[in-house]
Length: 213
Ligand SMILES: CSCCC(=O)C(=O)COP(=O)(O)O
Ligand SMILES: [Zn+2]
Image (cartoon, rainbow, N blue to C red; front, side):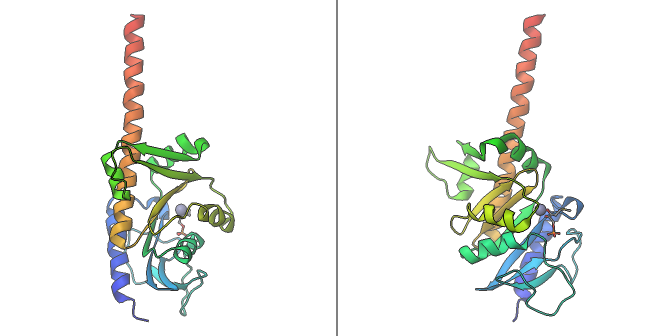
């Protein structure tokens, strides 16, 4: 199976995400579809900031190595198989950032975060003036099959995003370009939300200080 082009595409995306410092402490995993039942996924536990010939391995629809290799697929490969087996997604990106973790903790008890009135929700195809983007937040089960099972309940269509509480975000899209767009839009929305919280808190504190003086 010739997957050189897909390999290079995923390696380029990995470099771009690494330049943003989105792979702290070896976290994160990425994959790209090569055929109906084969995809390339990052090898587990690697420093994803480095570009090497052992960054990815080809796996089948069960997440098992499809070629002779000493590499281990990502520990979270079952989340990738869950998406590829249910959709026509072409690429999946999972990163841990401080921002996505804090948002997942702030809104985790609600089970979702809803974005409204934000231009960047258009990246998710939400173009109407009153549109809202609901992003599910699921519990971070240590047992990956259990995590994948809960995650699967939120896979709707060929593009989407799910937050795993105090863990990270997983996005998928029809292509590498689409998946990256959703990831960048999500991280923008998280930073915006956090800045807004901080600005409001600072403003309230300022008002209270003025009142007591
Ligand atoms: C050190 S991060 C803990 C595992 C994780 O959440 C992750 O994204 C990376 O795991 P992988 O096996 O894909 O390297
Ligand atoms: Zn992870």
